[in-house]
Length: 598
View 1 (tube, helix red, strand yellow):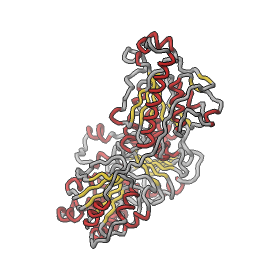
View 2 (cartoon, rainbow, N blue to C red):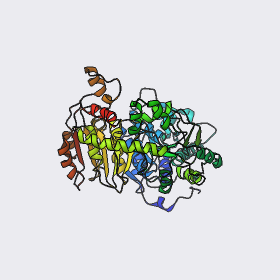
View 3 (tube, one colour):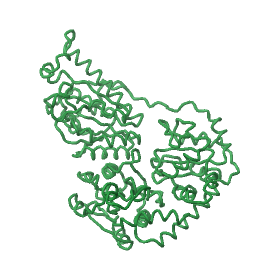
View 4 (tube, helix red, strand yellow):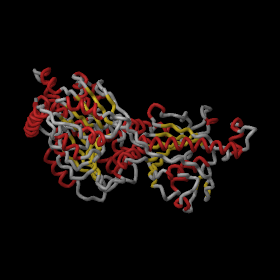
């Protein structure tokens, strides 16, 4: 489509920035159907704010803290599986986007970062709010578009400070036309990368003052090239793959981070009833079947502790390992497969393949459903006891887990089991990192839940902001389960007016970074408590009052059951449930669990 012809919806009377590059950005985003824009306040980005907020096509959100704003936009993009824009001013504002950009890069989320910049001649001369912004995210970005400065705007100022931009052999109109062509090409490339590759992209735009001038007529006609969704599947020899598949009596499938309803249920049923296959899922897989293995660590831990470790490890070691989805939480399966490598390891993904287990033999560049359609149509059933052996292990640990839960005092372990078993159906569940997602791995969740977690970089920053951003367009209510440090770290995630009344937050408050008591090398010392565990006694109720959240508190199993009985009821404000657990006992109960089931 030649977008020199302006569609009718562009003709609604409105205001535009007087700066051509600002007009171009808004036009390109609108042409691509990108509607959601998260804006952090500033002066240098005023041309962009004027353009986006004065066009009713866009849904604009104002978030003051740029780090929170970027995660808010990321959560929205994660939920919609569509690009979302984050706009900021110049200087350190852009640096605060970096954690979310890195998360988007490793999680394949199309976050579009648009930053206003000072003109090049004002960089590194001591001007305020000025840093080197061009290609700032070079190592963690799908595309960096560094637009050229318009010379038709503030012409006298630009010529005064950088006369080299004005070549004698060309008119002002000719030079501006060249700049426009360059900027259009860069915008086309950036947005194509976001849409087709699901990559974060960075668009950096230098603006000279005046910044706030607006016009009612947009005479500019940017050129947008059509984006053609190409078939990225390579030529795959399905017969060769089927030959390997059918020769392996021990096939292990591991599904990492995966969007809800991404894999056809018919294929999952076939896998679940094949005796030569065991399917390991994680809480972030959003895949369920009674024959699958949702708690990987509960299978691996007894092997690690067994006197017959080598024998059991050989029995579990797969001949063919197939991985799909995003990053994997379980450290135990990583350690196991790095030591007991499969003969073949295939990763299924259109875009990339991580050699997580140092055994990758083939990257099959296609989507999961296409892979299963082709490979399962060529399979034949093998006589195998692979599933049977490990299903008996699963049934044993499930029985032992039930017994253990009946015996232990109130701690993180029991709290998580109680919380996970009481989540209403069809909630959107967000999990913070570190202890939270690892505890959630150990328990069963209702298959109707849609589970999200920022596993790209696995940081504790941004969990609250991501959950709230994701909730904006969700038809279902949202629950965030988080630890105290992660929650306090991202408390600015609550500093906005977009919190829905059906938002629910559970904070497991164990008085510090409980994950460090679980990790090897923990010492009971002042240095450990201060610099690793980071013991805290902050009052969550005050934070709830500040941000208008209803506050509930639980300190034992009885008060937790009581709180949960009303926690999900309709309310006029979001509700936060603070669950206080014993800091010095939690790690012992968790580590003893693995001994108990062994």
